[in-house]
Image (cartoon, rainbow, N blue to C red):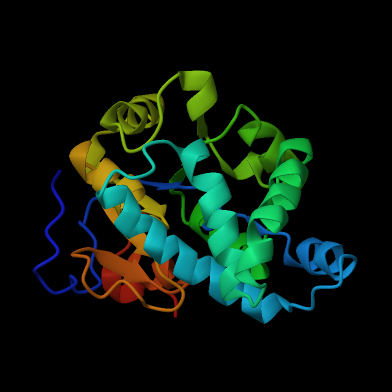
Length: 252
């Protein structure tokens, strides 16, 4: 593994010849339906709020990064239950109830993907990157429903490349899934950026395939990880000028 946790984070800069931006889906383009979760758990008598759930998601993603480095949960599906349990615990649900709560969330996710909310920040950023003529794509460890999720979210039109791990038969951090996306975009890895929320799965996987990895870190928790970090997707815009322009021409 190429990770090196002993160095300080990189300054925010990208290679000069970037032509494509690929994204993870969950916790990068789409987020947990916090309103549904709050209402569903209130029906069982548990009071939590969306701010607590957001905090729980951020911290649980950070912890998932560390656990993935230790290879404790080798596949995406292995992470679902412990991830949901930790999110609920951090949001204020008593630990004795988190297993039951996670089961409720997992059942909803199996029925209708729970990472189904797209923020205005995401929509505006994707639209602007498309307007700047970048090739856009999604590479996600998903269960075959990625295209349907993007369709329902109204995002599909922006993406030239959509790579679903279940369809491909390979999942992140295996470099092969990134290579397939790059090949579909008809570009070289050095011309591509990949943005995701789990360091060992997203950033290291992308790097090992020759892409530049960017970690989305809303609470800036990942100080020890040697990589570029952004707090929100819109932070990409000052780093990616319209193709054919100079960095000095980047809109603020």
